[in-house]
Picture 1 (cartoon, rainbow, N blue to C red):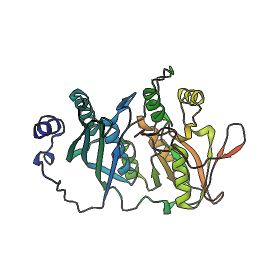
Picture 2: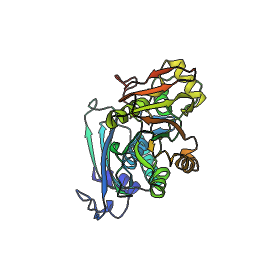
Picture 3: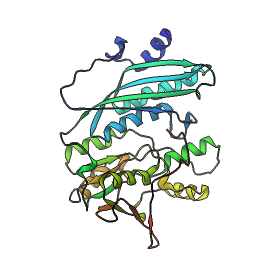
Picture 4: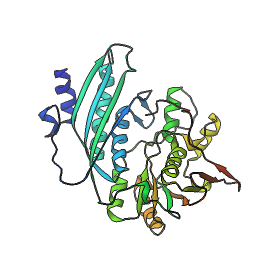
Amino acid sequence: MHNLIKELFLKKLNNPILKELSDSAFINYKEKIAFTTDSFVVSPLSFPGADIGKLAVCGTVNDLVMQGAAPEYLSLALIIEEGLDYKTLERIVDSISVNAKEAGVYFVTGDLKVVERGACDKIFINTSGIGRVVKNKKLSLKNIKAKDKIIITGNIAQHGLAVLAKRKELDLGFNIKSDCAALNRLLIPILRKTDGIKFMRDPTRGGVATALNEITEGSRLGIVIEEKNIPISTKVRAASELLGIDPFYIANEGIAILVVNPDSAKGILRLLRKHPLGKNAQIIGEVGKKPKGRVILNTVVGSQRIVDMLTSEPLPRIC
């Protein structure tokens, strides 16, 4: 284990804090910080557009960003099944290294456990993260008011479909790739430029529908969204119809839902669209006092339907 830590992990992820190899990383902060942790058990380990390593970095980075914090330091804990091929492990660690560098974060502490064959599915990863809050104003559901606008930063439903197609070996012919991406380069600069963002949520497990319902539940307000404004690729729409899956409930790993001041909405949208990760951003709806606690979708055919919270998992183990 000592050799593995030094020859693989320390070699790939080395920095002045990690090389101390202490039980805990000592980081001195005077400012307000955010701290988060998440575990990743996706199957299969690799899928179009990403793998479990990239997911572990981006997922924790994005959790910090949603709280208005610029991610800086992460921990890495691996639970590995006995017999895992070394090359598979090396590819995952390479992916973690590359994506950490792209996101501008450092792994400063970690843990490694090996369990007997059959005790886990190849590899499980836990990452924790610390970030510096960029402003004193806290992003919170309590900030949301009627007439606030809802913005989504990119195309929906790509991650879940990419994992499903790979897992089930479905030759759909659509070449859908996961949207997995770290959102700090997109959103932190905008947070520094404007006070118009009141709340953010990344629509991962349960998709856009579940995230919007969590917002209405927490704010005790309602949301009306326009189906025609939802950014979704033609390929994802076709694949969803073919498989009989509602794209509103499919997991995403590289987009965010923003609740913003109505006066700031167009300006924030322009800023988002200047970045590659926000080029497809759209204002999709508005917060209102009615229907209280509900999400209503105005469909392209002129009708309305209630968008409920996800009650079951159509695709388990997508993150």
